[in-house]
Image (cartoon, rainbow, N blue to C red; front, top):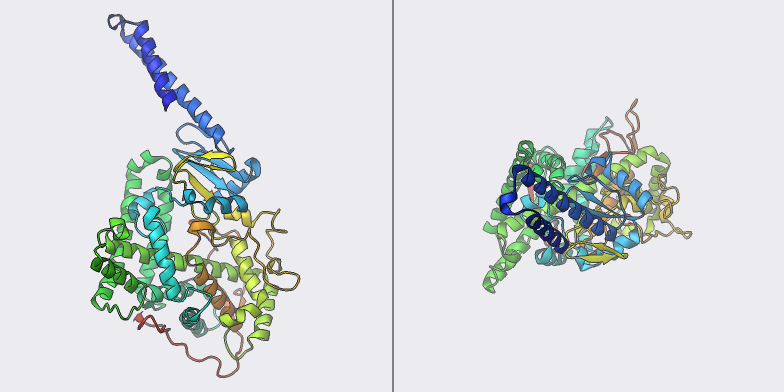
Length: 549
């Protein structure tokens, strides 16, 4: 900026020396303004060139739009091509925004363990959210909320050790058994697993957050799914505004923003109803779920005289609304999509499915369903789940971070507010790290002794200070749903149908193309298939049903 100021001042001095006020004609003024503008443009280009040289290497773009016009196809695949050209760390200018893409696991780990990389990009979406919640917040609010949620979620069973583990397993297994019972009722006709999975997985997180379950035919739940799906689509439509801000004034994008706000408010109204119901029946001696823990925290803050400072002064109810929304969406979509991909890979690799089923039969037997206690003795089953996570990489661009100040990484200067993209897809598909990365090989996660091994470059839940809060719950759910599904059913394609593509549809996540399966029941020993009952965790109070299974 100092260079720009000096050049502008010198250009002005030149104009004054060249002409007195009386000597200026219309043509002179025109030429002088042209010279002035040219000087500004040249100085700005020189400034950008100087800044670019300090950034990681990367492609050049065009004025105003930067590299945006050259983005093509699936962004994660295009970025992977750029890492092959410019190296595992490259930068690009997308409109008004600088991005730095990290395609190397060591650099991702190094960056994301630092405080300076914990920011979140300021986008149209985060503006709509108003800085509330935990996923899209940053600064002190994010730190306090992440610490608070980590402690409270461990209390509700998101831990691999202690009594909480059994409590969480009971919660999950209640939904797993309901899921299996619903599939059995359907029979052996073609079935779309997506809606059944969505309800069952959502019920795990909803019971923990707000003591609520949905039925498989519940109209309100279907509306929620529609709102989430539409939100992802609208968010994609609004994305260009994040890089070219003046586009926000375009009428069609203003309509999109208005619709996103309406959808957010509709979800918030339901969550507020939940908060109000909890507040009406709140008993500090009987904490039923996560909403109650927030109500207790607000009560304690009021009694201790720190109510105004709680949540960094933000509205308490709206913060609770957004926390519910964050955990609901994050706790359902990624697990559901991963399980869908697991089924797709089993259809493509029936030999893997057979080996998983043989291991389950050998260790678990045919008299009961798998449990978390079986996991250490089921290495091939676990390695199959890990390979699904690697090969699908359903969040191929990870979650974008932002630098909170100017910082140096690998010798390159990265300015404040730069978007940092962890290209997890490139890490999980790097042929220098994985033998034949395109192929589906569960054995790559097994040592010579047959034990499960997870290399440091396996990052399905991210890494660093903003690593996924729910990774423990996700691993439990993936194992219990996947192992039970294969233990109780053999999965086939409907007659005459083609295998679903392995490419998938790229949006916020990479989802499989729509497909149906035929489930052939694998007989259990008599008495092993008791009618499932909804979970009632000991410390969570009574779980309120919305409809019934």
